[in-house]
Image 1: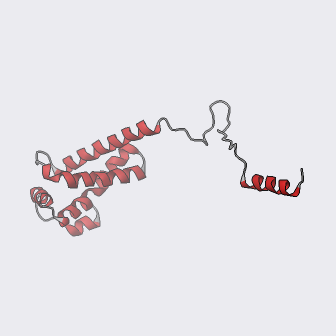
Image 2: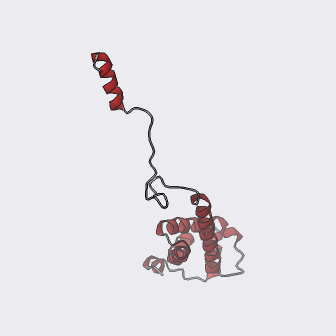
Image 3: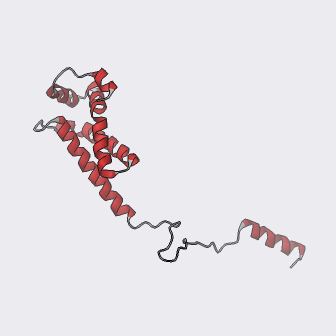
Length: 142
């Protein structure tokens, strides 16, 4: 638990915290984020192995928790519910990345077997070449 979570200390039980969250209490949500942030981040990071992606997904987890807290039925603990959202979001993120990044090819990547980078050629003349051509035409030089 972070120092901030300890200073916010929720002196009531989890049911009261859930009730306050469902009522829209900013203090209760601040406590939820502060108290569970490290655990959610570590869980998501363990699945994704990327700190930036884990930070993004952690933020999304708390947004989903904020939007969905009214539907929380207290059949499980708040921590279990939050961790379930975390795992689901991390797996969805990993699936999305796999679908969208598997067909991307870097133009800097080396071709297999040849060790050559993809070389793109521009068929247009550069501004310098166009100016040089214009200058030669005007001066009559060949």
